[in-house]
Length: 344
Image (cartoon, rainbow, N blue to C red; front, side, top):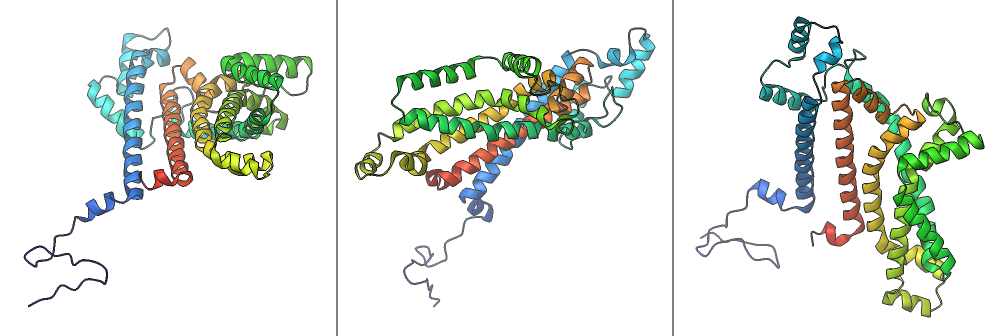
């Protein structure tokens, strides 16, 4: 007779008849693990978003106009147009074009630029660091200004300060990006002449050239961070542990910076993630106004010249960036909130 010996404190994995109970498949045990399940879910979401973006992009590029006419010019004959369409593969069935477009896009291959006669994705990736540097600098500046202002607003008892913060919050979120850019250019670039108004060569041309674009992009996140911090701290200051600490003589500034601010961190991360996507779209306008040599500038140039490979590559890269940033936010959530990490 065979005895099933189990470790002390556990029951043997046997059935009623004495046979060993069958174990779950390996893939099932892996999926039951929280980290693996989170990784699989994130990859599936990334693929689905990418396919959706590529499908919408394919449809929009096809209804935007005939690229053969843009390449051939006004004096092109029907034979010239037919030859160009054949070279571009536009004479093939639409589903064949769609499948090739999506499959090549996942390999980061959008073809050659019609205007530059070079790889479209290489051109976009060449401009990407300038855009990311601008956005990351604005995202770094926004908490440095918004969080302290929100803390002061939560601790202050002045109605005048509250009204001033309300003006900053409402104005920062209501005024369009292009209006803020024009006002700052006129004030600091034209009237005061403190900073240059154009940055055709990026940061290398003049380090001061990045100041105005960063300020324009940071105004909206500053107002949102201020609002979220003020509201979150106002709620946190009503918690029992905060009242107990205040009654024991803990300084309010120390209490806010070390304890009361922690419940607000998740909301602040959400704001930064949403504002990253907003900065990618608003950055197109900012880069056009300040002639910043980034992703938005090459995107506007591609649209105006009907350079569809460049437009497709720039849009796809922007969509992937947004999904990756959302993934980073999810990971940060799991680290800050144990309930999310344990799947509760």
